[in-house]
Amino acid sequence: MSSHGDPIPMTSRKCGPLKGTALVPGDKSISHRSLILGALTVGETKISGLLEGDDVLDTAKAMRAFGAEVTHHGEGEWTVNGVGVGGFAEPENVIDCGNSGTGVRLIMGCMATSDITATFTGDASLRSRPMGRITDPVALFGAQSYGRKGGRLPMTIVGAADPVAVRYTVPMPSAQVKSAVLLAGLNVAGDTVVIEKEATRDHTERMLAGFGADITVENTDEGRVITLKGQPELKPQTITVPRDPSSAAFPVCAALIVEGSDVLIPNIGLNPTRAGLFTTLREMGADLTYENEREEGGEPVADLRAKFSPNMKGIEVPPERAPSMIDEYPILSVVACYAEGKTVMKGVKELRVKESDRIDAMARGLEANGATIEEDEDTLIVHGMGPGGLPGGATAEARLDHRIAMSFMCAGMASKEPVSVDDAGPIATSFPVFEPLMEKLGAQLVRTSA
Ligand code: S3P
Image (cartoon, rainbow, N blue to C red):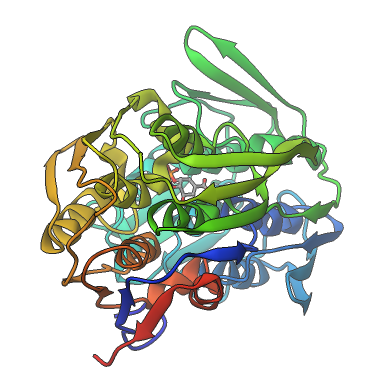
């Protein structure tokens, strides 16, 4: 079932060369943070290029429920009139974050140090995901949480009336947890310190600094030590959201595996905490180039050009690269089917607690379509079949996971027989224009009946 309606089964069949320009939507991580930080600011924050996927729209609704005025003006154009740090009102109803782990976890962090109570829920995927990674640190600030067994949603958080600043080492590589703790620290007197052993995406740190918070980052033997001075007065901003490298991954990878393809994907953020997939693809021998490299809003940006790459070789992806490409392993495992030799992905156990268990979802779907896969708790190994690629011919389960659905649709663009997914509906959470965008490049996607 889709998170927002009936299942949409979809089939992708071998297509001719993918050609043209792909304008992918705004970055999902930065879109959530733009709305949330705008809501914590007194005055008007202007946002352009906001991703209008279901995940971000659910965060917009949540910010309204906490008292911010969030207005849609036109495609990607939004304003937020916020309530200021510590100004959240108590929501009158349950907050439904749909499919979005980022939305619910950041918002839980944000409200946990205000004297209010809120109850959160989401779709079946989100209700199965662990929230203890948020409730543990917010308890240190003084918040209480009441959820289902295993720390699952629905869950009520009673915010701390007199929160105390904390020093917290994030136990797993997670930008969501790091961000939740920092956002909680905003409404607390004194310094909140967050330590991460491995660097994860740093949008929260960059954007908090941009909104005027006093935040410093030090690289030490302990890891990245982030210190945030509490109770700042955040200043409204004008934000242009860069295009999402995690969405760019799909047209890039499809172009690499479909014979004769040549696709330009302009304006992609290449923040090193997000660009691990592109490094990996280049190491595999992909014809992927960066054109017009530049800086925008303090972030490295380039236009990506991806061409059919018949000579890719499987590699061992260094485990320490995982945080910088954590959302890209599903599509990498598709590309790996079209390379010669084994692609070994180690240090990827966090994939088991994403929108679905992504190791299992990719392994089962690729096997059904004729690939040979090995896996353990923390590893995924794909045996490549060269440019002749995947046999295809089967339906994969999307498991309410947008990136699983898009990965199998890309796989089918080059496989011998078509590849199907049982439900392409979740694609709307992060890449609502995936279907027309890929079709315009030349893909053949067909909605099939259930
Ligand atoms: C995100 C962090 C990552 C990523 C997710 C977006 C964020 O999750 O998978 O899609 O915006 O902070 P984790 O923090 O669970 O690794």
